[in-house]
Image (spheres, rainbow, N blue to C red):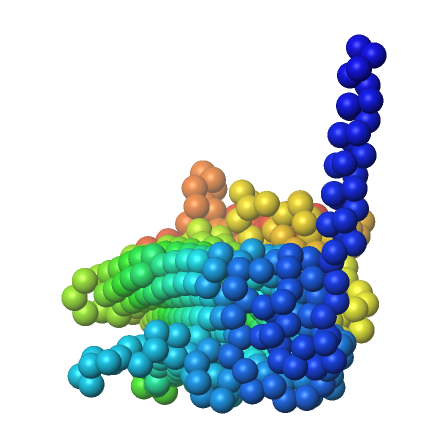
Length: 588
């Protein structure tokens, strides 16, 4: 034991010395003060080093070479510094390349990345063989770097004008991806990848084929709190294109003003893709053939929940808000689909060629052209399932080529009483309180939306603020912290009711009712044996006197025989108080 303790102490000291030496070796390399180029600084750096680049323009094509280092501007979160610290690819390939297994510890931050052409594969030695270009701005293959606070602009490639990801899971945060161009994926292209994109602005990118903003192929990216707007694709998917078994998750994004020459102005889902779209605002997008807001096509099974889908248009097709086509089976749950337009049908939602969407807890209202829900009547019939939804005041009809669903499966057709749809505020007015998104304050209204506490009883409602009525609201804010509150409980007041009946000369009967409060009244006519003879439709009556007329005919339409009849009146107030009264009349 005596000889063991000194040896152990020496070993511990040696480990501490090595660890201290490693920490001390991490250094900052400044460009151009220490190294003339960024690539020279990367080449000299070791794991943990930081390369700090002064403002200026650097005509370079960078390769991180697998190093766990940070390359940044002098102030990455300062937009002025970012815009004036420029890495210019000079159309000689991708501006920045990650191809050596980089992890999240490889960081790029605070630059303008521009003028790349994605020539990662080099030129083909054979004149007749074209090598596609990938990742004009940033190219990731089998790598997962961290890319933050950059402006990725004015780049071009066949795949991924701004960013290209293949077998990669990078984190892209707080970048501006703008004015890039590609054949597929003008802004971002994902192949067998799962990148995370948060707080990015993806704007004014173009694709001559598909995916103006973002293109997903066999990929499952996570997109949260991004602004994806004014992108364009000549073919499908102006904003986001999901292709071939892709399962992206889109949450709390603002997807607006995107355009396509075909289908899916905002989001396009195709070929067994199953994206999840939750709590997004999808507004003002345009398509030619289908799905101004969202198109689900070819056996795609998207989950579309708690979204505002508004003011989207289709100029020569179907589904201004949502289009379901070719055996698609999306679940549309708790969305507000309003003020959309499609010239051939389905201003709100269209269903064609064997599609079987499930619509539950939605508000489909005020759509401008094509009806609320349109069902194509040609070959391969559709089978939409609609429950606990409000279809109201849709131009060309709430239901087109489908029997009206109002009164069935919890569906209603009443004014949802949006706060201010013209301003994009689709919170439901409430006597109990609704959120004003401009002031972030709760306000109380003098009117109350019929969509509050009217969703499916089986749906969860625990995220709604109290009082929540113990039931989910219809529409985009159902079971969220922004759900409008239940009406305050008011003690039910008693109601007095009296009734008289008098025969007229034409074999009919005039019934006079007196109510001490407004109520919903039902009048039944019985013979003296107590059997029902006729019933008048239920009527909402004001306080005071009201006069109703029984034409003297039975339910079957034949004249009731002469004799004495009982007139039974039941009334129910809004507070739930019920009362009844009887009168008699002699028909001659």
